[in-house]
Length: 321
Image 1 (tube, rainbow, N blue to C red):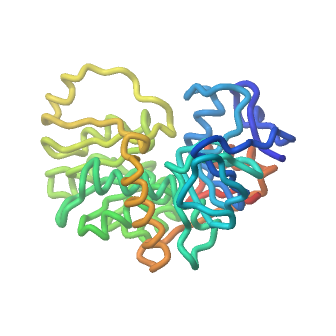
Image 2 (image 1 turned 180 degrees about the horizontal axis):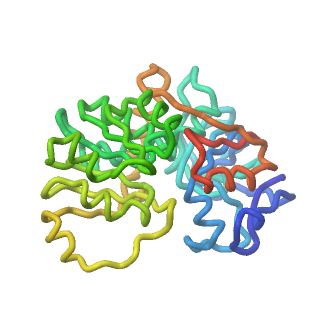
C-alpha cells in the first residue's frame, strides 16, 4: 500500500511517500480502507521527534474510511461500515489497523472527509469545554488561535454552553473567521497588548479560563489574563514548549490553576462515544460548523505539514487517500 512515513525524525522533508507493508488487523482491531486523514500538530511532534515513537512509523492520528476486514474477537462492526477514529496512529496510508476502542461509526449523511476532519480537534474541544474546565453560562474564556481548527471548535462549544469568548488572531482576516465562529471579542495579538485588552473587555477582572494550544509564545500572557483562581489549560505547544518556571508564580498571580491535559486521558471508551457522538451529531445538525481550509492528496503530506507549521492556516487541513 502507499503510505506517508518517517524512518528518522526531522523536518517536513523527512516524510516519505512510498510503498509500506499493509497492516493485518490483530485481535480487537479492524482494517480500515482510508478515505481521508486529518492533519494535526501532534503529527508534526511525532515527525520531529518531540514525541518519541518507534521507527519506521506511518504518521497520522485521525482518519475515516470503510471497514475492509475484522480481526479476531471483534464485535459491533462489520465489513462496509463507515467509521472514524482519533488517537490511533497510522492514518496517512491507504489502510490502517485500528483498535475498536478508538473506533466509532460515522452517522448516516455525514461525509467521511468531514468525520476525519472532526474527530481529534472536535473531541479535544469537547474535553476542554466539558471536562477540564466545564463551561457554565456567564463564564468568560480566552481562546488562543481562535481562527484555527481547534480554536474555532472551542469557541463554538463555549457559546453552545452559554459562555463568552475572547479570541486571539494574528491578522484581520483571521479575526473575521474567529468572529464567525462565535468570538464576542477578538484581540489582534501582533498589534494590541493582549493582557490590557483582556482586562478592558472584562472590566479589569480577567477571564475564568484560558484554552492555550500555542505554548511558549503566549504562556505568560495567558497567566496574566486570568482572574484570581482562574485556570490555564495548556493543551498544545505550536510555538514551542514552555520553559521551566517556579510554581510559586501561580501563587503570586492569584492562586491560579495550571493543567497540561491531553485527549488520551479523557478518552475512555464511554467518553469517546460521548464526545464523538456530540461532535459528529452537532456537525450533522449544523450546530457545529467545520472549516476545512485545504485538502491535499496523500502524496503532498509534507506540504500540509509545512503549511500547518507556518501558523498561517485557518481551519482544518485534510489529506485524501
